[in-house]
Length: 178
Image (cartoon, rainbow, N blue to C red; front, side):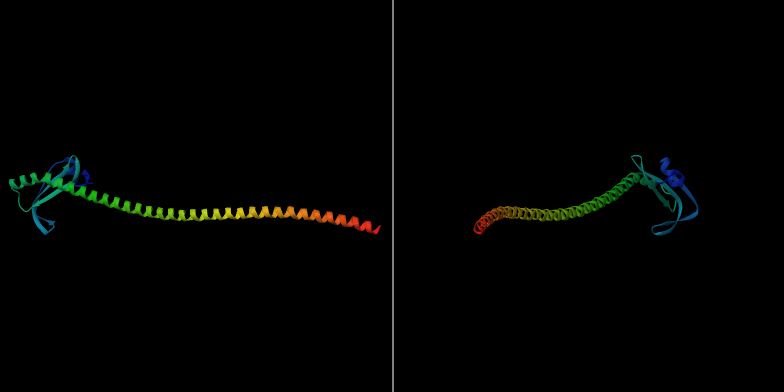
C-alpha cells in the first residue's frame, strides 16, 4: 500500500490526480530495455471504484504530443481494468491453491479416518469373537458346575449309603460278639 508520505506515488493516489514532472538535462531513467534519456515523466493514478491499485509511470524522451496524451488518457481505464483483472486472477489462483491444499488435507484426513474406522471395525469383530468365546466358556463352566453338583449329590448319597451300611455292619458285629 502506498501512502501519501511515500513520495510522488502516494501523492498521485491520494489526490487521484495526474502528475507531470519536467526533467532537466536529459535525465536518465531505467526501463525494461535499459537506460534512456527522458525529458518528462507523467504519473497516472490507477483507481477503480475507489480502489487504489497503483500508479502508472510513463517517461518521455521528448515532450509528448496532444495525440499521445489523449491516447494515454483513453488507455488508462482499460489498463486499470486489466490490472484489476490480473490482480483478481492472482487472488483467484491463490484461493484455488488454498482450496486444493485444503482439499488434499481433507482427503488425507478422510483416508486416516477410514483407516481408523477399519481398525476399529477389526477390533470390534475381535471383541465380538472374544465375547462369544467367553460366553461359550461360561456355558461350559455352568455345565461342568451342574455335573459337579450332580456328582456331589450322588457322592453324598453314596456316602450316606456307606455310612448306613457301616452302621448296620457295626450293629451286626456287636450282635455277633454278644
